[in-house]
Length: 322
Length: 167
Image (cartoon, rainbow over the protein chains, first blue to last red):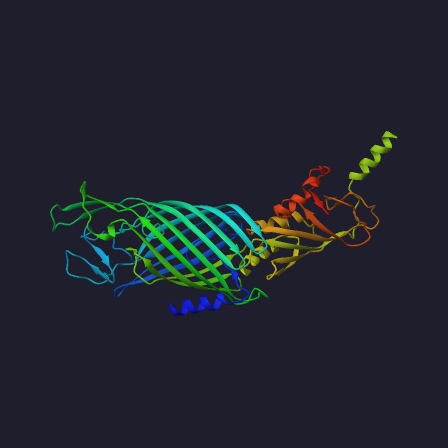
């Protein structure tokens, strides 16, 4: 944390400071070059007590036109079990402990790595005001997720936890010393249903339907180009710093078991609002390969889908047609 | 008299013949909307994909580039501007070095490799390398294009190939 702050201060004093909008976590309004393929390997990791949880995705991106980018991302994670927890009504994640009220206390329950499904994203840049070393751009985006996991929190996450759809607007300003981007939108998750057969309980069959809350997100990303202070060639070491502030609000989930709406007691299934900040560091090799690391911390309330710090790692490269 | 007038009027718009030495020697262009080397590289890679391009040299600090061509290949200026757009950016200016046919009479329009180039403003002498600045929505930012608005209302002559406005 202290190191990140120091780097920011050092960069802020650089006389030839310039902007960078290749944000590690959020998409800018700019789109990919036409006919270019991009590959990104990304991972999000956090520690739940003593258990390491992570999501790994392989993103395949393509510039359909100069203004229209599309990507598909299959992912695996160990966020959930194959079925919802038996005590779904009361289970919760509090601070640095996981409580299961109906059972003895457990720490960071182990889940297997499971294939989540596919996440699709597309953005279209509809307005650009370009100038010398500056631009103001606007894009709309749509997202669709073909994912079905036993996600046991109200907050939806289409990238790796829920099926559903979403959309929104991105505005990015790049002006020599500053790159600022606003990424705002909504997400509507599909209902999750499962049939659990447990001969030890009565009734034996449990048909559970979990209707997740709708979510709004509002992210602000800021980027700084630290090095080189003056570009001479493509092999110059390029180091960028980022600060991404991410806010989310989501509704409570609705739980229906065997046709009956159940009163939810777990705060993980109730609506909420939180704000996180993610300082990040990026190195670009040969003006193409991006390697980036960021760490997320909570500043206002918290998410129940992950613990802090939330580490994000990404490696990305473009492949141009010869 | 009427026929003589028509003859001269026609002459005004007939593209001049091409001599074997005539050629585009280089293109210099400025690119708008970028600051990073990855973006500049994207522009360079898109221009390099053009079959008539021999080499590209980009100035990363000033987001400008110089393009050189393969000998004997037809140079398509519009495709260079399109390559910049395809990379996700826009052209700030596009200038080309062109060796004209010294024997061709100075004309409002001249033809080269099937395309027609017409001057907006005074016609230069054809006894040295011309530096042509391309005028049009693909070659200039919106605000600069406004200064050419009146002259651009003139309709260029219809030719088989592409028609460019230059100055």
